[in-house]
Length: 505
Ligand code: MLC
Ligand code: AMP
Image (cartoon, rainbow, N blue to C red; front, side, top):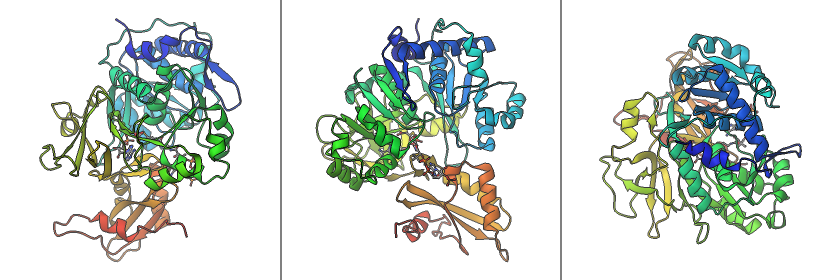
């Protein structure tokens, strides 16, 4: 037995004194030091009494220690469950309870708020702060810097990532060791990653993009990362000269293009820019090439599947498309009504199958059965077509989803909060174009007859229960919602009507 994920990504760098992380303050963490830190944390996890298969939920800032917790979970056979740092206590309570996490690792600032939730579950709580301090690392300090890797199989769970749903209830996507490892190895080949690569890493590490695509691929290639706490334009420009590659959401690219320091000369040494998580406008792709001479490589993935398709490294990177299926991954376009495969060129639902596709939603067999076919194809909820050269074009979504700055927002979740507010009869939440975030959230509320809803009070209620990035940037009051003859709210009409709400003046 072995532990494919740990051995394939982490353990293989044992004893290497080459850099793994280049930090904001100019210091470096070597592979060897990183593995020693991870092993010390793994010893703490074992001492706490965690057993293989237990879930470890973490709402912590990006730091080398946070990444080492992920490695420690892999080494101990634990299921890592990273959570967006923007989530409120209400949101966290659901994730913690639903996952039945055995350990919650949070920032010291959230300890008091989370303690009752954790106690109720009989789980353990440790803290880890942005600067690496906290009870977890305090305990780790006196631990041995080696740990006997726990045996796991390729089909064992490695991570849970929650993804919201159209009903407003989030689902825990169960990802196996093979899901993560196979995708990392595929991306190393597809994007020609090597031990010489230095990735400029400014993404959060609680989602697929920053944790799996960026970090796992770098680890699988044995390269290093300039590990920035978050996207900051000045830091990006300052550190770019040390990098060979960068991965980002489209907002990264539009922000970089807004800065004149970012030009052909300052990017001449770069080997590759990758974009994903949200549609990259063809216009941005073209502007980027004009400014830098580089063609951004756009790829397409999701929480449930990791990466599915990618524009080619060699060959044409076609603007406005997400490229071709990655090796070993099948993509087909089907009729949303009956699931039958459509002829080439027609628009339908994108379905994918391969070693990257997740195992199902945690304790939600009906939802799993509705999206994951018995033949292994996953119904993505994205609408697309395949052109005559095999390039996949995403043309829309069959799911009610807003993507703001690369974060997914399910309108239903916000509508449920709006509907509960005094004086509100009903509501509709839609995504409208936004120059920085791509899309942003617009809330429309319909008052109960004779009442005037207090919009400030409504926003206060939203703030109390939902993460900041989900908050409507504007609330509009309408007498009624546009509906079709079946009574269904016509969100497309609202989207069209408010299309220019955030357009630059
Ligand atoms: C921050 N805010 C956002 C936001 N990010 N609001 C909407 N959408 C977002 N994405 C809030 C802040 O809290 C702040 O609130 C205000 O908006 C302005 O913040 P900012 O300073 O401009 O934002 P910043 O901190 O710079 O963050 C923007 C960002 C960040 C784009 C850099 O959101 C980011 O790193 N996004 C990447 C998301 C990601 O990794 N997605 C991958 C998912 S995986 P206030 O109160 O100050 O107004 C996936 C699969 C796949 O999708 O295929 O990859
Ligand atoms: P998530 O739930 O965060 O995993 O988001 C996955 C969704 O992001 C996909 O189903 C797509 O709708 C969207 N997405 C990811 N990459 C791209 C891309 N390159 N272009 C368009 N949409 C994308």
